[in-house]
Image (cartoon, rainbow, N blue to C red; front, side, top):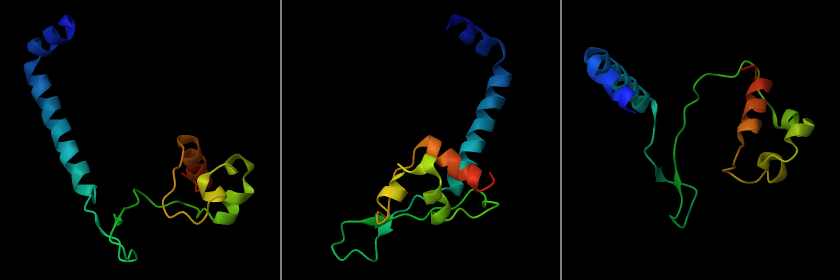
Length: 104
């Protein structure tokens, strides 16, 4: 830890530049997020909210439900087992496989 502090004190200009770059990157990333939740228009009880998401980049090949169901490695995916859920967990491995199927 002392070595890190000594390096930072010795290279203050570099540390300031890195801090500004990280701050600017964080601000740019924050601008891309749509984090405003609003009431779900289909929920008559008023308990649920919606959020809008934006894809980072389009898939080269659309991944259909039939393709996901046909892949035995995705047989335990919540989307396959419980297809009526509107919000479903996706594991990191499942996400990698879907992205690979989509050409990413």
